[in-house]
Amino acid sequence: MPELRDEEYMREAVARAEEALQAGEVPVGAVVVHGGRVIAAARNEREASRDPTAHAEILAMRQAAEVLGDWRLRGCTLYVTLEPCPMCAGAMVMSQLERCVFGAYDPRRGCCGSVYDLPGDPRLQGQTSWRAGVLDEEGKRLMDAFFGAARGSGDDGPAAQRPGGE
Image (cartoon, rainbow, N blue to C red; front, side, top):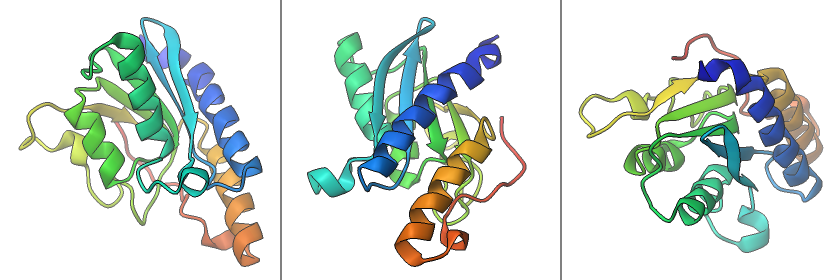
């Protein structure tokens, strides 16, 4: 069962999110696992790269495709500390990613159950299953630290807990 190691892999994503926080980026981290091993890891890099697509999920999926030598991420699981946005959720479906596991829900932009369930939309060719809430407190803590420092309050971060998932 893949759920047995979800927490272990999510800890690696949290470590990347901590790196993002230290670099002044929105603290989101992601890893891609294939065949029981991490094949890619990334953190948000939008500020440093000035690239609007430099979300942790996108960067990790790009790395995974390079490692696999294929844009199809079949058999891969993406672990990310925050619920994917529309762009990232769309990339998950388009890459044929098998599964996504995320920590905290994002009630403002999340597309794995919060605002919309893009990976589960039966109208799209292919679907990506998802699971929420794995180490969500760690992800929320990092988001609160970032937005608290940026705005003077920890209450403005997008990470809010919500029930739901796979």
